[in-house]
Length: 509
Image (cartoon, rainbow, N blue to C red; front, side, top):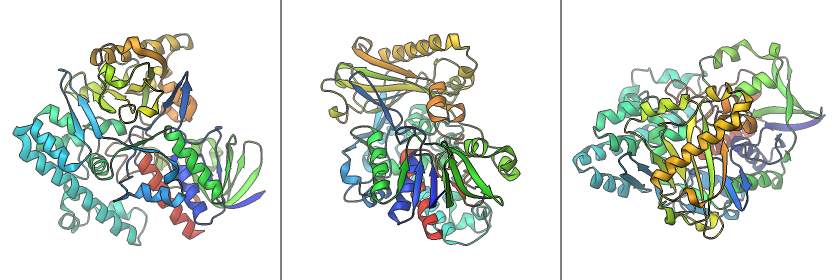
């Protein structure tokens, strides 16, 4: 038996950041990962001469050297910031409309507003008011969060506070918009559907259509990316997570790859240790799980050990969406096929909410298509004279799970053909330049991530399961969670959330 201050289960983004912060603060920490590489979704794979990014679209929270964001400061503390070649993305994204037109948004508030006003002159006044609300809402949300964090009260005080009589007076924008959907707010300000689609593009980052996507998350995404700028990095997100893992060991922590956790040890209802897959026992004062609460309770505890309170607590939460993605290596530079923006969202109609319903179907039909090509911002992310493109749609796993095994590959390649056909319409000639292609389905994500439903965003990120209602509470003493299942999804939010959690635990142990 071996003793530690903290045991971390799973080397995804949250697990890595938790372990690094604890090691930085001098705690005895051990991190277990059943895979042979760290990162979870934040990894890469090779086909031929191409290395494909699995998950990262844009990294938020970084900021600039003149005005560093929280994640840049965090990486500097770990001693890894200067080890990575950062690529600042020129534009937030491009939205392509079904009539062949489109709009690209600059990664700067003043420029973004000016460009939108130029493209939609009839709604210029509304655009100005909208951005004032977005920024004001985020300012009030931050002030409220800081005040709540400083208060000492019973668990759940945050939720109760929103009902207090003085709240609307102190935080009027937060009171008005906190529980509204993106669609509700956009309808309040704008009538042009193209403008609505241009402003709501981040719904795809959380896997919720505008009618279910919380405005609170859209507002935070908008301000984070405008103020702390979108980034990518040379060598894929694997380089970032490899660097964090190396920082853990450099600062005195222990990392065990190829070594999963078999079960959590409970004594008197409290988590006191784990047993790894080789039968070795480890003890600790705290345990942080970076895998889903469902897998933590369901796979690492005996049924009789799972508190009824945990079952009831998680009952209202729904497993989120997965994805269907083509990873494409082209034998030409991006400009040869007309790819000029690194991140694009492509619509078949002006009704994103209706088209999103195709996510429940087996094959892509009218689903909005997300495509990235970071060779646009840095030609060195792929071999000279080539491009790497990822293109896909959000898909629930249900219909894929029903497939008989003998039909799986047929449907997988049919899905890939349909996505490539969509790309060919937008970027004529792309098909003849494909050198390598791999396709990932929801079942692929289930196999590699171990997530129910192949979920890539954890639980549904809708109004009733996110923002004020993330299922971050543990029902077992000494057990904590640190992943996109209990917090806003995304690389930046996961790293910073885990850093805050680990800093809190470091003070307590």
